[in-house]
Length: 225
Image (cartoon, rainbow, N blue to C red; front, side):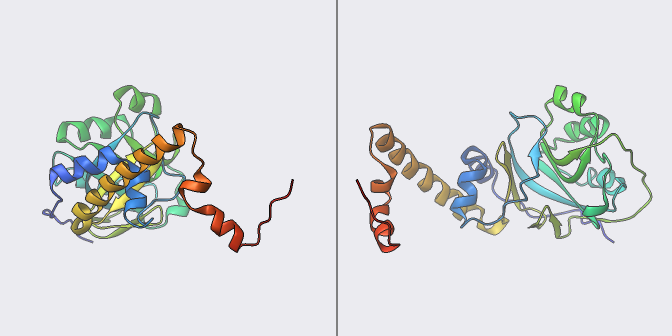
């Protein structure tokens, strides 16, 4: 088990753009890939985040490596915590004290395939958290894991330095070396959606805008009075 101190990160302006685009647009822009499982929801419904992934692998119920990860985190990073056996974890592995330490280090959010505790305090602090559950069951600090190695979190593969985007729609992972391309594709998609929104608001039907009449016909759908 190892802790990697230095990682490559995407351009800060690209990270900010991906955050502005949001999870749904980014997910579509990169070919509907990188989305974490649907149970990864924000603790605070207004939470949004975009940043570079500091990846952490922990044993269930043991948050030792989260503490270790904070030493190598930089301002603007997001902690992404996967577990060696996620199905076996019912613990709250992150609370307000760790959130206080994260904020002091400039860490802008947490994504963890486990529970969190001190939920009221975390919401009061407005520290962005995406987790699997809320649980008061505490943790130990006994088992080694890794920091800044490739992990799987909620079904998504995350490499250190990948861009993490989180909002009310969940969490999506953008590969670091593709971040610029995905951001440009997302901007184009957003512009196209705005044009479509204007047409829909003017009364046009999606069935015409998207050319779906021909598809209905090809699928054998018939109209009758």
